[in-house]
Length: 117
Image (cartoon, rainbow, N blue to C red; front, side):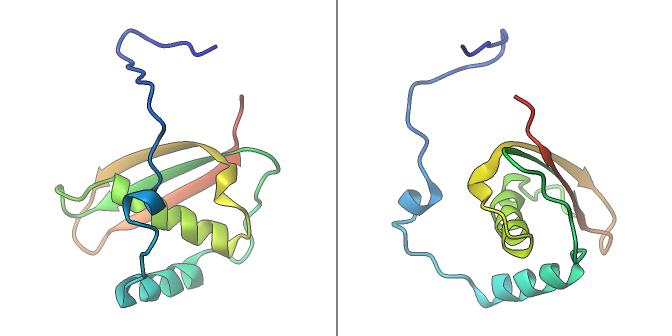
């Protein structure tokens, strides 16, 4: 049973996947490939990934207030799942937060925990 608060809205529609939204044909840009390599090098070599369903917390430090928080989500999950060898379909909860920082202080902070049901 879904419990909804007063401000929640539930609409009966099947969520559209990114693949369907973009006809399933997307190619990584050279900038994304470089970003993926760099992030892969910067991530700790060992990070404990719990068994079962996952809750990923992402905090993004932007220097530009106009930056969209949701743009960080997909590629961050894809890179984390690639580096730490887990299927991102195990992610059942995502918590995200945007912080504004000085230019050159940008960052991504993350944690991966068990999703408590």
